Length: 630
View 1 (tube, one colour):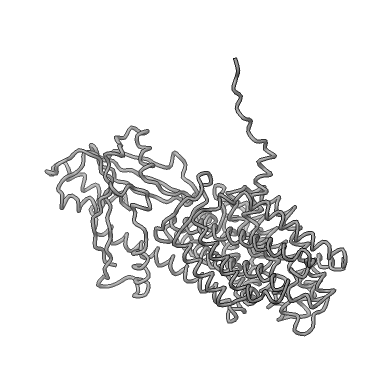
View 2 (cartoon, one colour):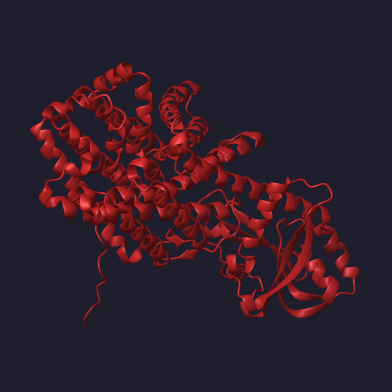
């Protein structure tokens, strides 16, 4: 008699290795491709008066210590400790800070900080694909000047293909991302190490002395150059945002022992090349590569920048879905692109907006060097927002003293403020672009939240308290008919307008009625115990609360099926869903200005229906119109 033996589970070491390789492909794409343009942009500020070796060493020192202070210390060591049930990112940090806030005014202020950070992050998501792809394809011009005229068309073609492919998800090629990025880091480290061996003098930049002397010697110019130095740390936020996908430890290990050394070797190799040949400052990354390997390196760089762009776009989709769940943006279509990874989503509306924005930037700026002036302000703005939220969390959640909090986060704030101030100077040159994008998104979020709150207040004002309705129900002559009716309501204490309209026109009530309120929790995912709870208010009438975290994708019929486990008479084939469709009209004394009301109405008209958002079968939905004045 033979026995069947189950396949053994993969060893822990194998799982850790898979997480490390996966982190290389998803987490480090943005910061890993920064060597393509970061040092080149820095050198552009000091080449006008003749490039000196001490200037190169100074810039290298500033880049190195930016990587140490901003990425290694701030994000990897401290910020990654502040996870919200394992989830990271600016909105997860915002909800964690709001949870420990003591007053409603403080919670509102923290929400504004989080909204600004999220808006700037999405603004950065428009620029990263543009500058990354452009800088990679520009390597063709280094191989032969005749290829320069093809840079723009090829970049546009790659970007169009990138956004068209979003609907298919990254699952099919996701397993290739890690090995390709591993090859990328090995290659840039190897080319950099070769030049360092030829000119080891460049290693003097590992100490802060050259950077300090650069600042003292150049004064105002050094402050302006910080706006380019920050390009070396763009993508640091991804280490925190993607923490839930791979875990804190694999991301920290990969950064400290592989990615950081590779980046430092490449930056210092570029510096060594420029010291020996100042003409190489025009494009130090590609001139570092031997001519034999130049075209393969252009191909590898292009693939790496596509991966980096994909990571940023996926992050924007995730952030957008979180904003919808937190009530900061209207309902949008959210599609899952993977049957195994819940976090892989595709948001068609955001994809179209990002694609249009990226193409406008590529065609408008036409080169990575010109686009570098527009890059940085959104990133540093997000750094500042993260700094403020993290200081609150470490003081209140981790019980740090005010002195310790002030010393640690005050020091980080000064560094971030210096980077932000340096980028403010680039507003006229192009820095207004991400700022305008970010502030536009912030305006949309705050307008949507304010409009919905006014809508809810007006609805509550015109609604009948549920207790009053239940008191009158036994004395009424309302006919009860077979079946199950689900009425969605924003406030469980008031009677849904859709129910009152149904009684007014149809004059019947189903034998079983569920008043369902959907709540969004300030945690990534709702536990099974939190998902659904119900109570019987009267014979056949139940009040149901359904909870979703900001990383959950709502599916109301599936959630309501859990009522059967609690002994409730729920049968999906006998259920009708009654929804109210609001028609907004201007109030006599409007509480929203004309422009903000127009924006709100535009967003409301373009929001997907509750039927589609909550994945309710359309053939079981009855919609009843409601006029609301705001």
